Image (cartoon, rainbow, N blue to C red; front, side, top):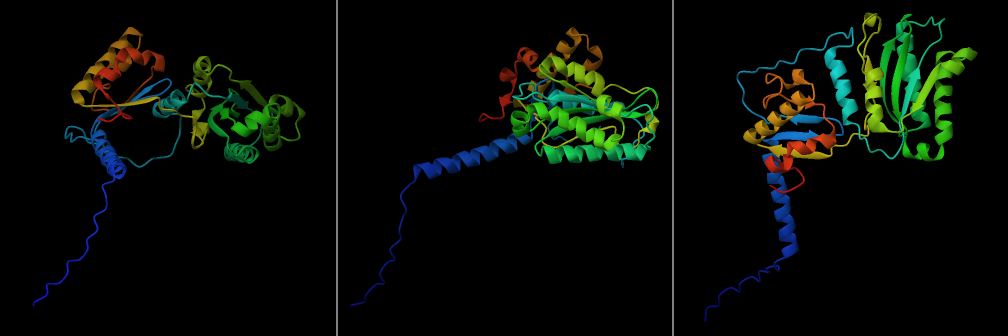
Length: 303
C-alpha cells in the first residue's frame, strides 16, 4: 500500500489581543503623524502663537536662501527672533531666573574682539560652576562706546537649591576675575543682578532691556548681537492641527483680536494668512477666545 507523506505539524500561535491592539495603535499613530504633517499647525506658548503653514505647492511664491553675510547691526529680524524666543519661555517655572548686566569701568581699553572673547570666557566658567545653567545674552553699547552685556540666567535645579545665596556672588566673582581683576570699583559695580520673582510681569521689563533697538554705534559690535544656550525652559502648552478652511477662521479671529488691542499693523492680510509661517504675540490666557477646540485637532488626541 502506498503511504502518503505525513503532513508537517504547523503550529498556529494563539491570538494575542494585546499585541494586536498595540500594533494597531502604532499604525494609527503613524497615520496620524503623516496626516498632521500635511495640515496647518498652531503651537501655543506662554506669550505667543506660532503658525506653521502646511506643505503646499505655491508657484506664486519662490524663496531662495541667500548666503549669510557679515553681521553689521542688530537687524529688525534679529530683534524679532529674540522677542519670539523670550515669548516661548515658560512662565510657570519652579525657580527664579536672574537678570544680569555685565559692564566695564570708565577706563575700559579692551578691543572689540577681546570683549566678546571675555563674554565667552565668562559663559564657560559659568557652565563649569553650574553645568545645567541656561542663558540668553545680548550685547549693547553704552553711550561712551564701551560694550556691556545683558543676560537672563536660568540656574540649574541643584545649584538653585543648595547654592542659592552663593550663586549671585559667584557670578560677580567670575566676571570681575575676567574683565578687570585689579579694579576694586569694578568688583563693586561691574555686575548688577535682579532676581525675577514674577516672570509674567517681568517679561516686558526684560524685553525692554534685552531686545531694545540700538540707535548709535551699532557698527562697532562685531559678530552676533545676541545668543543663547541650548535646552532653554521653553514649553509648548498646546499644538493644534487643522485644514485650510479652519485655519482661515482661526487666523481671522486672531486678526480681529489684534485690531481690538491696538495692533493693526500686525493684522495685515498680506502678512497674516495661511500661506506664511507667522508668530503672533498673545498671552496664553487670551487664546481661549479663539476656540481652537472647535476648529482644530489636538495633536495629542487621535484624529
